[in-house]
Structures are given as C-alpha cells and as structure tokens.
Length: 359
Length: 144
Length: 122
Image (cartoon, rainbow over all chains, first blue to last red; front, side):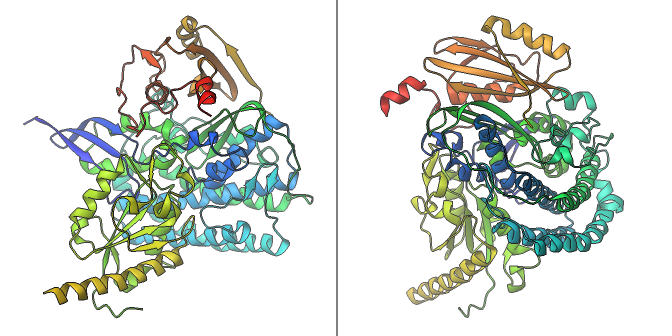
C-alpha cells in the first residue's frame, strides 16, 4: 500500500489567510515530496521603480507587506540615505527603533495567534490577537496608521512623539508584559501545545546553514545571527543579545519568538529612556547616484534591499530579498517526511509572508 | 441598517493584497471588533458562504481561483471588495501582473475604501452588504 | 553606521570556483540579484560571513549563459529560477529547475529587455 498520490494544498486554505499552493506528494500519510508554486500575489512591485520616482517609491516599498510595513519603509529609506550620504538625526533613528520593535511585537503576536489557530486552539488565537490590539493602538497614536504607516521617510521620520505618549508607551508595556507572560506560559507549558510542536519539523544546525534559513528559523537551530547587531538605526547604542535556541524544532521556533517579544519590549524601554532631543528629519536635495545593499532584521529574518540609482529621479533597480523567500528551501526540507496533518503547522512555523515573497 | 433575520457567513480570499487588509479582516473577527457576535462566521468553504470578501487586486494567476470560489457560492451572494487594491488596483495598478480591481472579473456590490481598510470600515461594508443580500433575497422570492 | 561592502567583479567562468572558495571559508549565500545594464545584465551574488558582506558581480551579455551554483549552495535554486524566469537568462545545469513555472507572471520575462531597449521605447 505505498501508492503515491498528490494532494493540492491551497491557494485558498482555511489555515492561511494568504494564497500559496503546494503540491504534496504523499505515500500513505507521509509527505515524501513538495512542489511549491508561488505567484498568486505577484504584483511586479520591483518594476514599479520605472514608473514612480524614488520619493514616491517609499509608499510602494511599505506596501510590499502589510505586516512588516514599517521595516520595509525603513530598509528602502536606509538604502537611499546611504547612497546620498544623508545622516539621519539621532531622535529619528531612536524613533525608528521604537516603531520597528513595535512591529516585531505585533508580528510575533500575530504569528502566535495564527499558530494557535493552526493546531485548533481557537480561544488562544482570540486571546493573543486581543493583546495585539494594544500594540496597534500605540502604533496608531505614534504614526497615524494601524498596519500601513508611511511614517518613515528619506532623511528621518514624519511624526514626532511627545512626552505624554512616551509615558503612555511605558504604561502600556508595563500592563501588557504580564498578559503576554500569561499566554506564553500556555504555549510553553500546555501539554496540548507541546504535543503538536515538540519534535515536529526538526531543522539541524547544518541544514539551517546550508539551506540559507534566516531569522527565528535559523536562531532556533542554534546559529547566532541577528542583523540588528550591525547597529543600523540606533541599535548600536542599545543593549541586547540575539535569542538562540538549540532544539531546532517547531517548539524552539515558538520559544525564540516568544522571547523576542520580551526582548523587543526591553528595547523599546531602552530607546524611550535614551531618546535624544532634536530634529526628526534631515533635509536633502538631489537624486541618488550609486548603489547600496541595506540589511535589516525583520520579524521573519534578514531582509536585503538593493537600490541602484543613476542620478535621475527614477532608480535603475530596486530589489528586495525578503526573509520568507530565503526560508522556502528550509520549509521544503522540514515538510519532507512529515505527516499530512502536520503540514499546516509546519508551514506556519516559518512565519510565511507570501506577499513579501512574491512582491 | 437592515432587518435581516439570518446570520450571513463569509468567505475571505486574499487576491494579491499586501496582507494589510487581510489582517484587518482577521482583526474584525477577533476580540475588540468581533463581528462574530452578530453571528457572522468566517468559513473556509465557499458552499457555506453568503458574502465573499476579497482583498487585493486581481492578477493573472488568481483570476481562476476567484471565479472558482464565486461560482461555487450559492445564490444569492454578495461580493465585497475590501481596500484600495480590490476596488481599483490601488498603488500596484500599474504593475505588469495586475489586471485591476475585482470588478474587472465579477460584479462587486460593496466597495470598502482605505489602504489599509480599517476594521470599522470593513464592518460597515459588511453591514451594507447585508442590505444588498436582503434585497437580493426579496427579489428572488418575488420572482417565484 | 555605514557597513563596509566589498564588490568583486569577476568573469563568468571564475564564478563557480570562487563560490566554492567562499563556501569553504564559511560564507553563507545571502541573495542573488539581477540588474539590467545597457547591453545585458549584471548579476550580484551576495555573501556574508559573520557580518562581513561580500559581493561577487558578473556581467552577462544578452545571449550568454551562466553556470548554476546549486551544487555549491543548495539554496541558490530559488534565486536562480527567479532570475531565469523574470530576466530570461539561461542558467545551465540547474539541479532544481521550475522551467519558468515559479511565478507564472502575465508577462513572460517582464525584466527581459535591456536598459537601452527600455529607453528607446520611452
């Protein structure tokens, strides 16, 4: 009874809000091969640089993905700033750190919720998303948007934060921290959750490196690599250590993300405490001429922005390599040999962002 | 506001959205906004659904999928285009792979503005959709 | 704040051996990206080793082929297929080959024309 059959997964699937199609080759209940086909969300945003000038493109860059939109804008602006030698003011770089870390918390909470949904723990999903709303409210107060912010601009940020908001940020985080602790104990200790996550989809250290995994996927397999250590924005002045885990299974990825939520809270507190006074944007003129690879750590891992300008308003090339794109080979690896029933949860453990991947 | 007695179920499909509208649609279903208290349930099965929520523009690949879901839904049905991309193509309208808004493909009853559409706007859109659904039911019964 | 980024321009036939060297030195493949030039494309192979960023650059005329580096870096398949599909570059000896079915975009090779051709259209 080892006849092979192919089961199509997606593009419209209840587990994932986003469309991805996988052809799963099964031998009884075991997945033996996976053929991904992407392109359902392919919009051709990289080619839009020919139609929108480099200032307008900031808005397009933010819309590559609605979850890490803050950091997409930041990555693009950093690349342009480096080409044009714009020194952004200290206050702006600290505000960028606060915005980016808020994005990380909201993205990780979103993932935790979807993950709970994937193994059928509906109430945990609802609870996690309820906590996430508090972060979104703060983001809205800080930037004016809930998911798409258009807050980062070339040279700095658009909106300043006053003292009352800063103290509110501290208050909300103080309130949120025990609540997140409470739900994270469910993820880490509950037998139901552990049963679904422990030992599922193990990615060894060597495999993670050779398959080019990034972000929590790589760190959960014991590699210490976090692009924030490059010290972009104001990260060089903040005190933190990348979070790593050694098990390499789905539980380890979950642990890394949960710990990163608390790390982000800590980073926001540090940034709020050290926030310098001064302007929030540096003036500039001219057009970018040159090229630069800007690297950032997004919630899903390392993102690369390559921008090449030619001295006119229109860029020659804007390329973005997003973390999910780099994690696809690792996903295919962990899916091979798993049970059919574990497929949804394994797809979720890489924290897929399909709209990033396909642009 | 309508006086529709039945609770509609909705199906959500992400066309080529950037996730912004998608997570807002999901946020509508979770606490704080919680449209489930009106009996509205997000289902994964097109044959159970009355309302079709689409986020993001139509492109060459998902054309078939959208038509497929739409044709499987029982009549009468309502289509709601959520966000700027679903309404007109939005910021990516000029992309080479984009056909345009959802109305290029199937008739749309309600357009929800915004980039990304706010949960309040989405709920408003769904309520508007209920009215349309109610009218469609009336017309259908009249014909009988 | 500026990160030091080294770009090495190399010949196409040196690409494979240089990649093997980098792999031996512990570099990981960060990305492969393609940019159109006046008469063809340039392809950037970016590597990183403990925050040292290194970039190999090959330039490729319109009818030239590029060797696959999948046998050195397994994960290169996704980038190589992307380049082959969007730019219409022929990459030889690909172990995993989607044959242009990765994106299935409405336009075949949307980035196919060279920069000179685009200017002529404008």
